[in-house]
Length: 168
Image (cartoon, rainbow, N blue to C red; front, top):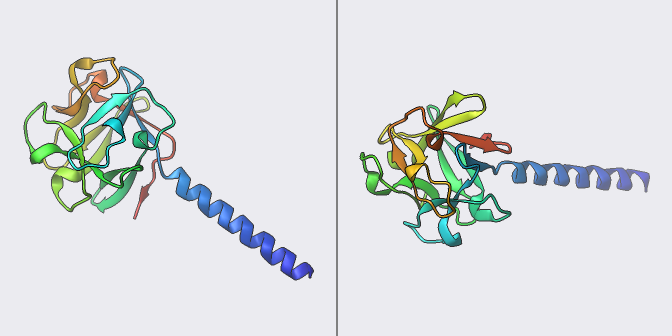
């Protein structure tokens, strides 16, 4: 009887710790200039839905995880849709929208992070070598997120709040 109780207790502890690890892999991307989060607009499930900034709320469309793509790159996957942040149309241009799309194996879906000072990072697209940024240094909810040259401006810098390990 004691053995069964110990085994059941060990199993429950193992399941509980596994659930915490799975939950912990998601994080928020917070724009340094506004303190607002990158989110999939309107909780959309659609390919092509825009990524915008919004108040950091308790919704799954503001939560992201990194999926290892090798060589320091990762896919940035939205929790609510399972789709990945990408540069729309694989554009090389400043101002090209960041949207969500199926997590395909293309360079416009791959990102890396580089330190931008203190606790912030540049989030850099592999295809364009440009940074994720909030258009026009906007402070507003719904402001568009696009790519731009990696310049030393606060709307191009992101804080990662919560655990952000890369998963395989």
